[in-house]
Length: 563
Image 1 (cartoon, rainbow, N blue to C red):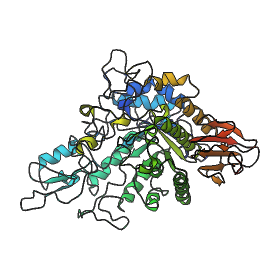
Image 2: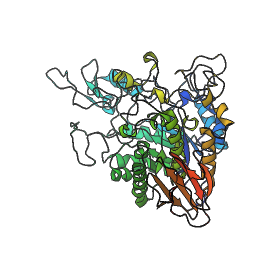
Image 3: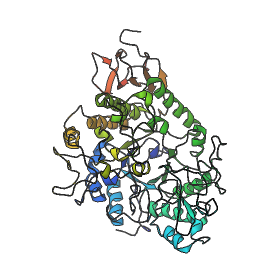
Image 4: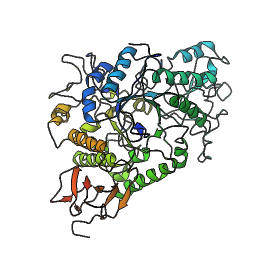
């Protein structure tokens, strides 16, 4: 491959006029380990992804976001990084990644990579050097090493708890403790150290120089800690929590934005920010910081008319003053798949309840997942699709205990089944596992696929116009054609019957969603562009979304009985 320092990188699909591509992009999340196995070892890899790029191009996505592809001992499925400038050997080589970026660009798809700035692996050279150097050394200053409490330092330095369960501190042989907000194999970096700053800035440049169009920032609100390591309390002032959303974070992301904007094709910064206060969230989206952040309120919203409408309305209203696009996400690698999630009892919906094996009505969940997907495509902003979402894959809940890999499972003592159920490998073809995920005669996939997925394969759904895959292909194609017009960056709510809502975009386009049991009649003369389910005599049934074009300005919607 040509020298990246002198090579001119050409990114696909330049924005129209001055409008950046990422403001309304469709981004497909690739969890490499479970996407496609090219070499037959049962683990997805870059060769497998490259072989499936035509599928992704046909699906109609604008960019591919890759979960961490760096060398890792896999204490947290790749989010414990050993080397940010290399590719895990299970996935391929750096040359494979560079070629993948190039080929994807040729098919019109940009590449986004995960960066994990909060922590590294215990196998990272910095942490190994810190253990060898001992207390008080410069090597330990890059992390949070402290003496413990108690007469012999036998208690952790404070009571902070790991996000994965248990104490956020682990003691080493010389008596000191180190901080890890996640697994013990993921020691937190000290972002008050200048080498931590400079290292990550160089990592950004390393991948941007190789044609990467942007980065998704893992745990973006957690990097900066209170230097005094004060305890958590039930209430704290904004920006003063001991390890979440601290003010110094904005200095980090302003520096990163300067790097991203320094390229002729400006790179995009995407934050994973789990913040309940929308005003605090949007501070990260100012014009000199991050470009977008994930809309977790929408991801966690139950399928209920008033709550869903409030979530959409609030997200748009919150982002409008800073002219930042919101993002629409209904699944990712950390949450239960929509078909299962929407099929459960709405009233118990929460991130804590999503992974609990409560009864699921998959038929209901599938209807709602289809409706939620088409609704997401109709909203202004960018949209994220997690691999397998477009196939309507359900959560796999019967994984044997000895096959589970998620630290949430082990750290909770099995109380939390973890996230493995949404990470089971993709079914591509054939009637039985591995469904084309691996070549014939290959090793079994790293997580077993269910025996009843033959009807969910890409091959089976490609020929079925009523399949989930066909809905995604058709919906994303229409979305790209922008039936609402080029300038419809907002929506106008229309009156509609109880248990439904409708909104207009542009001069003629309207989207109608029926959440309730009673069918909702279409406006007279409306042209149906696409529907998530079959209509009933010209009316929209329960759990269905429909896109409409009207001859004049979109009108309010009446119920089937004209109410």
